[in-house]
Length: 116
Image (cartoon, rainbow, N blue to C red):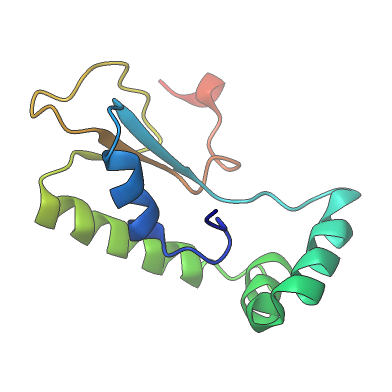
């Protein structure tokens, strides 16, 4: 069984592509409220090498990880012929027959009701 936490993103994409699907939605983990400490404790106990990254993201509020990941996914999508959308819900099939990759890394800042 694969662990989502320790499996490289593009390996997961390749596995997903081995089955038929229309979309690959990528979303960040939202840590807030009472479960933030529970998740951080779990990471500390089970994936200590990731603690500095999670602290940077969730305590220091650094967006650099998400910016870097956005760029990596964009490059991957371009190199492999995938449509790559940011905060869009296309509800259509890609004309290439490949899944559409949708980035929702910043969904907590973007509200559907605020879109025009």
